[in-house]
Image (cartoon, rainbow, N blue to C red):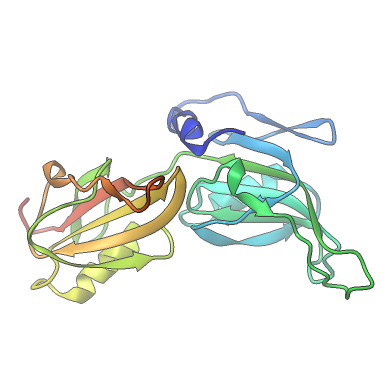
Length: 248
């Protein structure tokens, strides 16, 4: 089983400005092309993903990884797609599901094996087959109206005495954090820091922190904390944005 940490360098190494060979996923001994810039993280599992950053799903008429990645491309914030067969489910028109996520998930997070008796206990329970995952590099926004980007993709969260509080996000969404900052008013927020936290390489939370003065990358010194003897909360994807007329 591959750890998620070992997969992220592969995802990050993809160059978005040049062509690359399409990776392949095996489905019933048939190799299916996956369009660039996606990479196949895993395939052939009997469980679908459960985790943070869920964006929704749709059913597909056939098992079609390319249609699933196209759905991801058309969905805001999507970086990860999980296509699989959900069998014995009378509530969906087709058994193939394409579920989208705003974060990456390793094989260890494929924990939904089905087992629901949606047809009643006299019928077969749902089960998952042919589960495969595809990922593309995350794109951090380059501009947000009314704000300027100070730093992006730092390894630590901002630590500064002008801290005014934090808000938990359902997904890693820079624009939503900007809206929170704007709603707080300039007396409370002239700068915000949005970041992602993981525990043992598994996404754990997304945080939007607001500050009354602008800060820089040198203040990204909150790298995380131990939350148990074996679990460390690690802060990643830290980005800082300041109101356009403020100074860092």
